[in-house]
Image 1 (cartoon, rainbow, N blue to C red):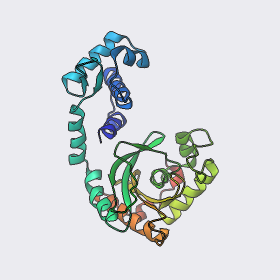
Image 2: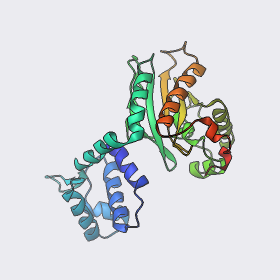
Image 3: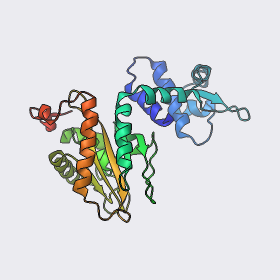
Length: 278
């Protein structure tokens, strides 16, 4: 959840402050490193002076967002970030509405349930609820996901135009994660058009071999897709489950979450062409 909080801070905090942008960049470098990082290394990566980076680190350390190791004097993410993460968990309406729905989905059969949002060209998991199945599919809050190969990622794209999707995903071919991964834009667009029609997206061995996932978009009061939920389950454990039946359950859960956010229903989208969405 700490990693997800850092992404959300950068995604949602709109400010003209150069210091804020640099401070967030410092946090991202520390977050991506397995080991504490020194001042000069951070300065090199950001192409800034060491004194400027030291001032930023001092400010972040005063608030507990970074901490210095006693032995090497290098820096790592501080426990103060946990306060921000807990605030998101307590105050975020999307998470509050989604968690019981994911719990209910995970309580059925062998579903592992997830909530995610889009951060640029990737998806970001916000919640993950594991099933009691003997095979667990692990994706932790804060982890990134591919948009083109996961059902959750595809559900995040259904409200966008073909041109917008192309700009987000970049040049083809997309990364091949399994032999079943769709790597060409035309194929992906075809899948998304089907998802818009039936109301849910699928990933059949496209992200992880042997795993099926089904996703559905979550909409704001304006009808915009702001998040998505999905369930994933192993073929070997649940071969008897019909994908269409799973799709209905995931769509129903997403609809309840969307209603809680003020979305009035599919009738509100009748006058909107999804291909006009930005």
